[in-house]
Image (cartoon, one colour):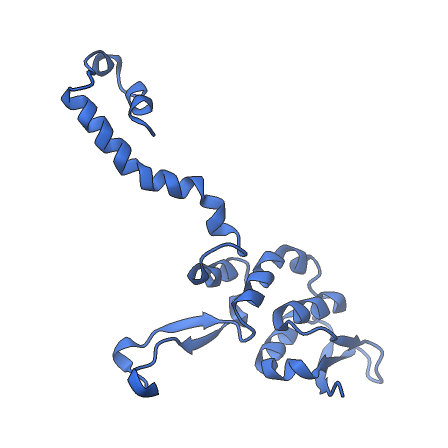
Length: 185
């Protein structure tokens, strides 16, 4: 807010005593300066809640808001000199094994993925977004009733624990599931 906008909010008796060189003008200038940083944040508020533009450290919090934090792993973020662990400066960061970009995509598509939850198509799409690997296929017709088999591309091997957490969370509730990695070659 500018000084003139703040002055309009004052009672009329104060507005009449307002002079450019008076003490009240100084107070209004100080108030405007104090409000400026908060107004800047409020003007750019959408930046903080857009997972594709938010600061890196805020994306894990956004993931928690859309119930994706179970997919994150705890990792020690700070190591001491020489590669040895420094317990005095140990910090734990919540990360997705496939990287921050994949987490941003998951959070951005959370509503769409939630609508498809419990379906084989939703499971396939979730796996592809989370790992960044294309080519997951789901076989629904197996010799066992209520059983699906997920065939993962070889690139998904690097994200083994992530794939298992996603399958446990996103598969249709009434089915059992097995998954395997197929060599692309």
